[in-house]
Image (cartoon, rainbow, N blue to C red):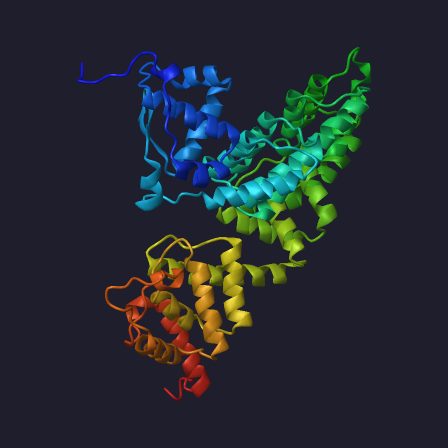
Length: 508
């Protein structure tokens, strides 16, 4: 035993010191549940409660174990605690002053604050959303890796379907589905949530068809999910199967499932005569042929009644088999499925693409933009900065700013890479365009002028740190051929030869 110890009465009769910096800087940005957990844990630490555990804390505070863990994840993010063990689970409290003054972590989680404000805006002033629920929503961003805008769209989707008091369990299941499908953009989320809405509406329609006036259960919605997205039956085909349940004493989803399974297995009668059978075979072959070509382009897929219904429903929205086949070829390169073809056609239609030629031009442009993004990634030593927003930046630089690719790469080469490299490069190119800098030579002159005019800080005095000053600046040197991809150098050479008329074999 050590020289000193606390009285057993200290926890009930003593006092726990709370740093004012915690009250001023950290408490206003945390939920009430998170503050309760932090203070109770601080009491346990200062009172040396050796038998304290997460379960005991949850019991004492009237909370669930998951609520306590979510609160500690919040305090980990803002730098007031750190996890020291997993079995058993243990945390170490960090002095508040260390986080604020030593610069180990930011005292405020600005991303979480912005997310909280956005969630409050979604629910509106007529509904009080608890901080613990917001923390649960934020776990989809932190743990599942979903973008904040996708999570906000998911919340709006659940409110539109089930009201503001929707079940967290149902929303969490949908969030896990979005993460599993690697949904990263608003467009992808819209497609996925539309599918979820269609499943729920179909489930309600089946219940009405079966004479039931209630909301569908989760198992019933799961069956509809299977019929629509695994077996590829349309809602009309599902409701038609419901008509065959009249012979059943108590029609149900399970009975409808058996009917659709029978159809999917090809057990339906086609006629009582040889002539009728032959005519049906010809009709079915004509109906199957376009889908057969699509599956050949995909390199996968099974033709059955469900997939045929999906294809011909797609043809109602896009009566252009050449465009559908080209979409299948593109999806086949990524080992896609028929559902991916539908999603790709939908995204093209939203962009006003209505035929194969327009789609081919769009794909070629997209692939060319990917090359430039890959070149930037190689230059910065990171993965290519993919994403819809970055493709829009490339389009802006090339079309609006009329900035050559070699100038874009040159500007990128003088940057210090961090999480905001693309927006910072955008600001540099905006300045180039404003000063009519559209060649590497002009950019080098600008860089040299900047280096010569850059003010030097006074010795012994630290000025205000500006975010832009944290980036390394390019010295006035000749362009490094290794910093520019070979394909871009070849392209630049071809453009110069074309401009001077030196590209013909006779001149060479």
